[in-house]
Amino acid sequence: MQTIAPGVAIEGWIGAGATGTVYGGRWTSDGVTREVAVKLARGGEAVLEQARVVARLNHPNIVRVLDWGRTEVGWDEFEAGTSYVVLERVEGENLTGWAGVGEELAEAAVEAVLAALAHAHEFGTVHGDISPGNVLGSREGPRFWLTDFGGDGTPGFSAPERAAGATVATDLWSVGALGRFLVGG
Image (cartoon, rainbow, N blue to C red; front, side):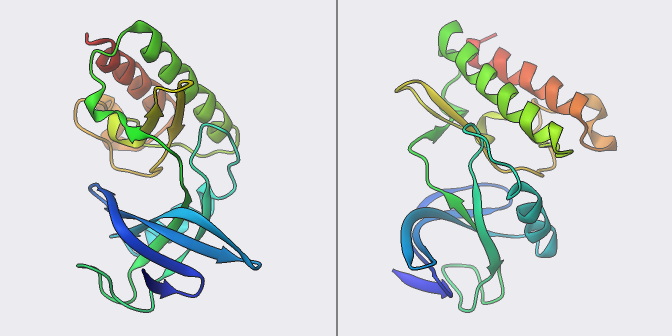
């Protein structure tokens, strides 16, 4: 385990995406240590600003942002000064391998994402990149969590007008594309 910033230690790779890499880790705050996910991100100040915005959200279907900052030491391919975001650790996988899971799981996932978006939109926050890679799911329950707010839009899941900017309407269009993907259509 490597301490990368005060109270933030990481180990073991969890996953990678377009904007960064997620590692397992531990976060200590107010004397309490928790198992978390730590994203080391490309994008500098924009990543930290998005973390500030998402940290205001508190919904059971949104992966909570717990802390953010810049690393004091390097890790893997990331050098000191890299933006990091400490995230609630949920037991799920992204939905990229869930194509054609059927109507029941697709409906549960879409309902969870819509509930998360209703909460975010109420606070004036749009997601911008609803796609299988940004939704985590567990078939137990089932449970679903929205993560990675602020992306540029994933081809095949972005509304045509997304190029002009993320809006509530483009988020909702992407939820439809996600649902179609999950039922196998």
